[in-house]
Every structure is written in structure tokens, then in C-alpha cells.
Length: 224
Image (cartoon, rainbow, N blue to C red; front, side, top):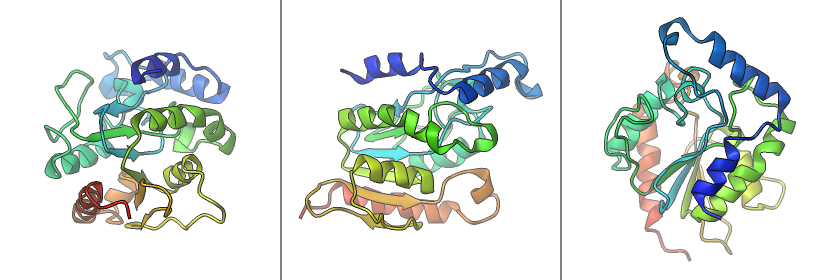
């Protein structure tokens, strides 16, 4: 299996009736600013460098961002914050991400999420997270990252599940870095780059730059 074949299967998924209904409703009703655009309105695959050592795990597509553009963190304020930071850190060739064909390339970085369809109120149910889990697992199995950066608690839990971390799980905290002694994968954490966090000052550009700087150093850290 390749990432391309996995993503072809992913975009055809209809396993979660609530999410299918909502993603298609959003794509038809649209936001006034985008009323002349054709929304993607399907599950959104991961995006980035297929040889990436860093994988960033978010939550789910934005209603009028990735659900519209078909690329994660593209076309909304969360993506504006994220890709500007990735550009500053040397993981992206440009600081903006507006549509799928805007020339953005990621370098040594791949972005994915545990839920591939936009959920109402940005809140997937536990059942929906479980149903979508195999896609994330298959992606991470193919990528074999050196560092995984989880954006928020749901991404943290989904990644611990993938790593088969023994319970009780370590608590999520911004800036945390953990690794099981027998594994070579580092797991790092940051608050999500949502407007709820960035506009309130809970997550600032300087804070996120610091996380990415630490992440960059982990890519070349010894396994022992």
C-alpha cells in the first residue's frame, strides 16, 4: 500500500452517517464569502512530504477551511497561523496556504488528523474517532515518523493509541515531550492552533515557535 492508494480509499469513506450528512450540508449551504466556490465536501487526506520525519496531528477538517479546499489547515485562520510558523521553522516553502494548488510544499513534515470529516461544532464523538482511527494508523505506519507533534488532547490520545502506550496514559500538556524507552518515536504536544486558542492568547506565535524549535532538535536527537 502507498499513501496515494490509502488516500484514494479514504476520500470515498461514508462510515459515519452524522459526519457525512454534516460535511455535505456545509458544502451545499456554504459561507457567503465562498458561495461561488465548489466545496470539497469529502474526507480530507493527509498532506506533506511522504519522506517526512515529522508528522503533525491535528483534530479534523475545518468547516470552511479544509472541507472547502480539500487540504488540511488550508483556507482558514488556523492554517494561517500554522503554515506561517512552519515556514519560519523551515518546514514549509511559503507562509500561506489558501487552496490546493497554491504552490505550498512541506519539507520533512507531514500533516494529518484522527478525524477526516468536519464534525458539527468541531466535536467528533468517541465512536467517530474510533471509526476513523484505522486511516491515521495506516498513514503513520507508512510514514514511520521520528517525531509526532500532537495538536490538542484528541490528537494526543489518538497518537498514544497508535504508539500502543500502556495505560494510564501521560496527561496532555503544552510543550510536553515523551518517548517509550524501547521506541524511537518522540511524541511532543502543543495546544491546538485553533482561533479559540490563538485569539485568546492561550497559544501565541512565540509559544508555537518554541515547540517547533524543540521538535526540530528532536529530529536529530539520539535514540538512546
